[in-house]
Length: 130
Image (cartoon, rainbow, N blue to C red):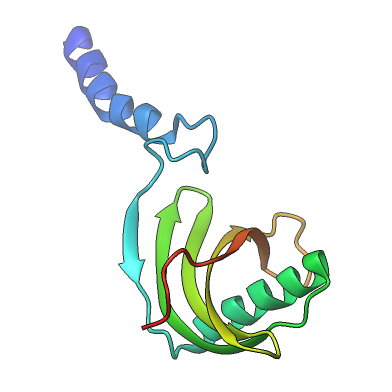
């Protein structure tokens, strides 16, 4: 009877230990839970796109203006979300398509902002506007 209980506990706990065994959540390993295409007109997507453009302007001393979001997908991971954006931005001369990657993490310092964002990539898209 005692062995039977131990086997049940092992069967129940083993999948959880595999699920939570994560070394680096953004390395592309088995931490992806699921991917969702988001509505490009939603306030959250627009706010994240504006954050990406503003952060890029600070980093590269440019003056890009967000025109519109073309597409946005969110990859849900164990400790946050990863947003992959395609957006159109105006640099004052022409409108170009850019790709951006923004990480959304919960703020564990319990300040007024419950989420923290980090721009990890912002590049000119390798394909032309359509």
